[in-house]
Image 1: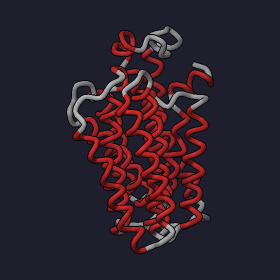
Image 2 (image 1 turned 90 degrees about the horizontal axis):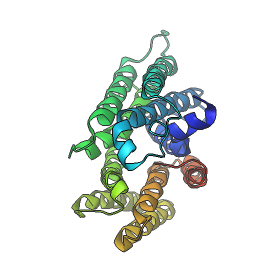
Image 3 (image 1 turned 180 degrees about the vertical axis):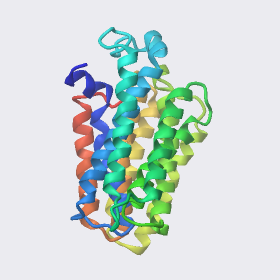
Image 4 (image 1 turned 90 degrees about the vertical axis):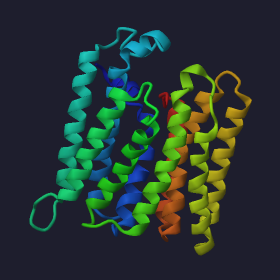
Amino acid sequence: MNLALALRLGRISNLPTVWTNVLVGALLAGGHLADPRLPLLMVALSLFYVGGMFLNDAYDADFDARHRPERPIPSGQVSAQQVFAFGFGLLVAGLALVALASRGGGGLPAWPALASGAALAASIVYYNAHHKGNPLSPLVMGLCRVFVVLTAAFSVAPVLPLPVVLAALALLCHLIGLTYIAKQEHLDRIGALWPLGFLALPGVYGYSLALQTQAVWLWLLLYETVLGYAMNRLRRRARGDVPAAVVTLIAGMSVLDGMVLAGAGQLLAGLLALAAFALTLALQRWVAGT
């Protein structure tokens, strides 16, 4: 295992989308950008993400041997056992950092944050172990991102404010549509189109936010542009269009996060989310996002 291989296994190009998920959870729960817990939470939940990506390759080794032989395990660059060990180790390290970041005045971790982190780890493992042929796998993948938001929120507040819940539901809908597309990526085509309807729901929520806060229109327009670009690639169905749609929608999570943050009056954080969107697209040119 070397650094270049670890970066590829961990799909680190997508990490900025995890950071904006953390911003949504923490800031909408009452935190602020200068909160010293924010960087620690970003590192902790990045470890969950990278660990999950490691486990994805480890569990999919046989599938990749048939359909993606260039991946690190089937190409012989690393063993599945090593990747399993690193993946589970990163989940444990992530949970330990959540415990550290969520400590209250008494020095004890917030149990809701630990419970949410444990649920995140369980969802990651379950998804990776059972996502092939599982019609509910898009929902499970969506729940993984929901638990990222909830873990960040519970690390700064004992209860979830309604904006956090609504933001998590919008993210869940985006992930269901995105994961359905990603499941077809190796076929380079899309079957039934109805699951893509989930992608329309965050835009509806964004529209309701824009009616209350005029600045949200900027983020809503960009989010709809991202969706339109991805849907156009899927409509063409030329070779390479499905993977291009997938990585664009992955990056688009940060635009959705920015829209929600702007709707809560967190305009600076919303702009940072747009920067995260651009960074994700740039990094995907260096390390494949899928």
